[in-house]
Image (tube, rainbow, N blue to C red):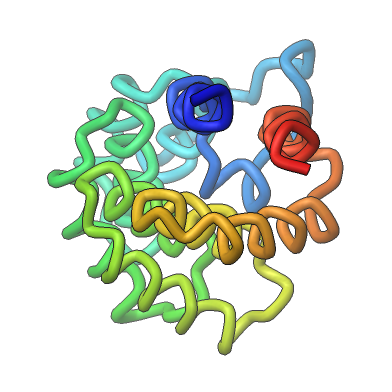
Length: 181
């Protein structure tokens, strides 16, 4: 029971966008605010990076292109609007199949909707294309947890930690793995 509670805490404790953090984060919480960019895409990305997801969503809805779709999806996923995040993530991936922000947003949206089999499939495809993409392992591990496949979850989380040892999620994942050990 303790193991389940810790893994559930892992799901609930994700305060930072798992997908996009690795690809777009420019600094820590005490980083200087981003300059005010002139266009809606750059403004939306800056808002996303500061954790202002609702404002980023509103701004990114006015932008076009795969990066706008990817960050829109990530902003929606961070607001737990998982079903709504899926379409823009897929749209971004149609144009740019290895877009890390879109891949992570898709993984988060599928796991959030309990579409575990599809999340495993999509994240496995992402890993084939980009074997060093840490958040594909993270979200596939989350999906394996949902399917009650602890051995595969552990393997993916261990790989995630090797690839992203300083990620915001790393301390929680380490704690989980040490409790399971």
